[in-house]
Length: 91
Image 1 (cartoon, one colour):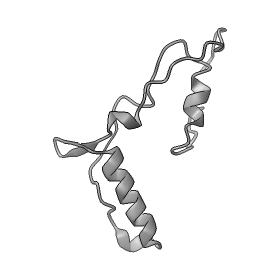
Image 2: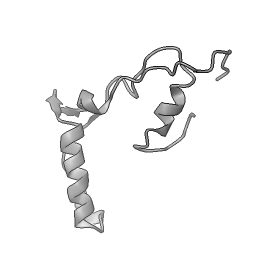
Image 3: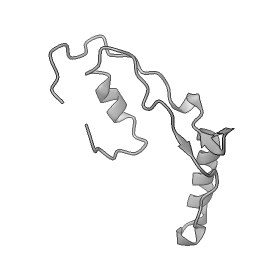
Image 4: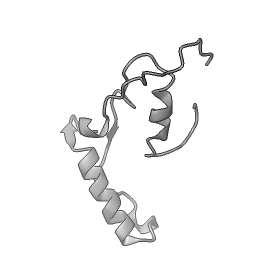
């Protein structure tokens, strides 16, 4: 699962729920330094920029100490699956 750049796809969190014995979140804290897209001249599609900025403002809506922190509604607590793997894992 390491170095797996799956982006926003929740499948890696679902998979992890079958290997853990405790509840978890995707991250402890996430932030951006901006809530608008920088370097817009490098984007081809204006609609893409608008969608991305909307997502940034929604997901990173907590402004504190010069940073836009992720709203907890986008970092839910996942529970381990009842039929999760119980043997020893090697990382």
